Image (cartoon, rainbow, N blue to C red; front, side, top):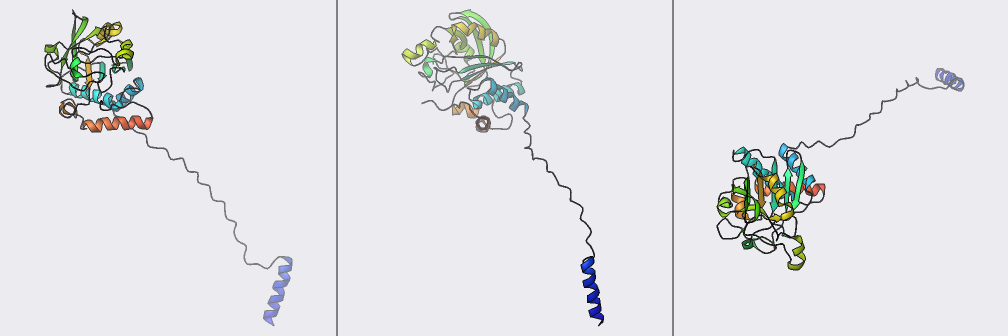
Length: 272
């Protein structure tokens, strides 16, 4: 009877109020967590990497690997006390044909490209491409490596600038051989259509007469000229590479990879 009575009471109450268990306490809404977007880590460039990036912007058609080697040679020469911390740097890429503008002159202090010009190679080095290089008199071959510019003079080729080669065994006979920068009529792009190349020198980095004096005046008196070629002997033995802990291959590959990721850029290849 007691159970029936209790059931009766519950049914009656449920009709009026609903027969339930104890009401649940209302749950407070949980705050929504907003995640900040993940940002890629910033890459911190070394001063030399920053300088290379600037040269690549100024000379987008130049091989970034060659530019990187030029900066490496300059850095090593300054570090070793061989040269002053020159503000102007000329880069010649002799892995390119004479039909291309393969000379770049940079003002590093002001982050500017001053010239991009044709430049001749020696008769003994090849036809359109320079494939053989030398350091001996009467070879009429182009010398490669790092040069320190010197005084100017008036000679048989007109206004000229002497250079002292700093790479022992590769260009240190430059003054004795009279390897100088000068103007020449045969450095003429109009010759390309008829003979497939510009004219050749006796080993000097000769320029168009219209710009020779301007380039010489910018580059004279202890500035740097870096002449590059795909010459394994020089690339593996020059004392101006490797002072920053990287091999030539690593320096060039890193510069080219960075340029490739950024898009564009020409790369030096072995001459045919």
